[in-house]
Length: 211
Image (spheres, rainbow, N blue to C red):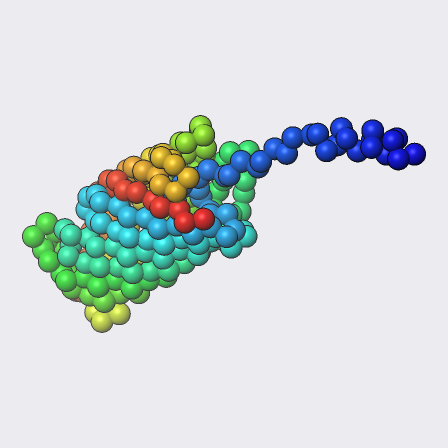
């Protein structure tokens, strides 16, 4: 009986243990929502703004925070919000985004004759779609509608945009990202009428994933 038991257990003991591959992904824009337990930081240099951000995954919800400086307006924005991992199929993921922030605008008019000084509450609605096209590359599509509602004067600024780009994984922690944006910028200064202009943006940066 002892010999029979040894014969049965030997093949099981001889089976190799296959290590589970670590998930690959970005930290800046992709994936659309960070997996639970992951934390990432990112930064971008571009036109017309520069930015820093933080992301943390909680199951189907991700918390994100970011700060932006628009150097043509001389304005600053800080915000915090969530991404909801609402849909996933294979290598594709879609996440609606909801955030709330504060925008301080100096009113500089060197590049924008309609700009005006304000302190604004700035809700932002949008969405991110990410598609992993290879082991190290993800394509991203973004859409967002930030709406700066001035609190100290009568006026607002709403800038709906769509964008696209890619994020490339250099290793398990570091990634490079490039995204272009196009849309409409509608601004209404005090005692003025709404004025619509072309909105655009180019963002190049890095993401760093802690876990």
